[in-house]
Image 1: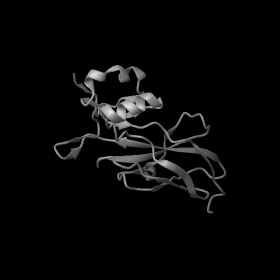
Image 2: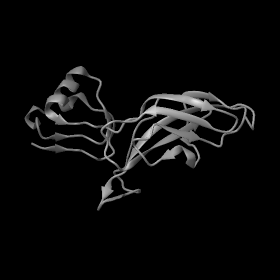
Image 3: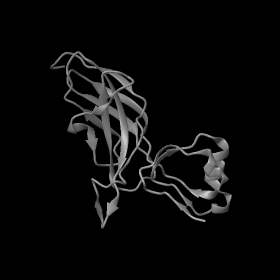
Image 4: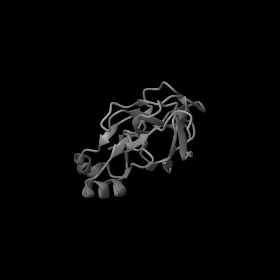
Length: 169
């Protein structure tokens, strides 16, 4: 029995019922999606029976490194183990619960090894919530396939509050 769901833009919690597929042990492929597993019994099963890492997740330890009246520099620890062919995006909202939208082009980095980006221009004297996500594009014939249905987008990092100062600072 084979279960190959790798690189399919699946996201969310892996159902605990996957752990019942003991006859498929060794032939379960779930890697390069945006999946998560929090049930310890399921995690043990996946570690022993499935090829399920890496997953496309947001970077860790996201922080605001600097902000002024027009720009905010956001830093993070890059996601380890992902293949080339992706980027990080900074998203912005006026509320910690969203909705979030992409910040202007300075916030998209086409390098999964990057550990910071500058978001802006932003409006001065305004509170924003910034979050980061990871995007992984399939590689077809050696090139990134930007509009592929199997592009995998992670969930958002926890949003951080940034308050911009007066213009010109």
